[in-house]
Length: 131
Image 1 (cartoon, rainbow, N blue to C red):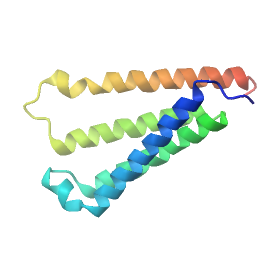
Image 2 (cartoon, one colour):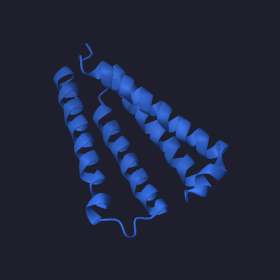
Image 3 (cartoon, rainbow, N blue to C red):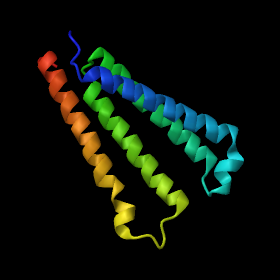
């Protein structure tokens, strides 16, 4: 099955995001005092870094292989991203901040995840209509 042109750059982007998740996990475990000084829980940050790396790697592999399960992997990555955003905002505290500043990232990242999901689903269905 031939890979769509847009899948190669997306696969490299998600491979880069995999490295970002691994590095976040590594820094959280290696330098816990740094995270603790700014009010972040190091074990939670390491866990989210690990989950983010796994989900981004699944999307990168799915993009490269044009796998039938790719759209579900994109949704899983979106759920991990949502969980990370909620826990991060809970750790840093958002009291006193404007509501729009607290809520603005959610529709933006939601639209990004939805656009990637729709694009990958459409491309996979065109290449493997029986799936």
